[in-house]
Length: 281
Image (tube, rainbow, N blue to C red):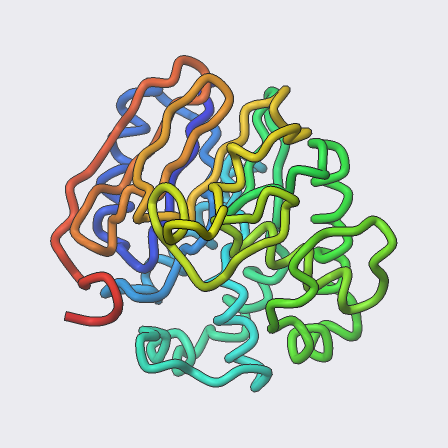
């Protein structure tokens, strides 16, 4: 059975179905399909996208799974009053849906990291201090918080940019927040691994900042596995020996991309320009 990873959908339900049809044809039948997060928000049909992914996951006997991205976590927080809707959100249909509670319950049971056939899948990135095993263990800590009795309190305290640098001695909410930010928000880092959340440039930060993409930091401990990620549409598609970046800007008029992890072949669907960078058209 072939395994495919798919980049950020962000509510582009029609394009997602077209891509799934192409995967079915390419695989010649059943396939394992892994979404790297941000199923919803900013695109035109987040409710349909979320309903379809839930139904597909629940009927697949474990063959289909989706990571949590920052937009997915944002929806969960908004749904329980732990965060306000922002001007650029396109979540109203989900929040008003009769099956909203079931959708949110399904979403908060999704993982923040997966390790499949020597591929480590995350939504955004991995700090240089973590190896694959630690990444999975730390993702599990946040997953437990999201599924536990105090999950709403966790969401209320989840937001914030500090601590910006991982330390194994972190405890409590500071520890969980740092894990969430790394796995769902990080792009650029200082050479010591401190995360920067002000810039989204496709290569390095502003001149003289010293900021680098998280995956080029020296002594990155996940360099021995292939990391698959999304989240960074300004960076675009990335295919390197130990790195696969899949956010090819579907919601911005780019493409929705799937990669077959077995042979690195690509399947892509062109997308209309739903939004411009920085907000709605």
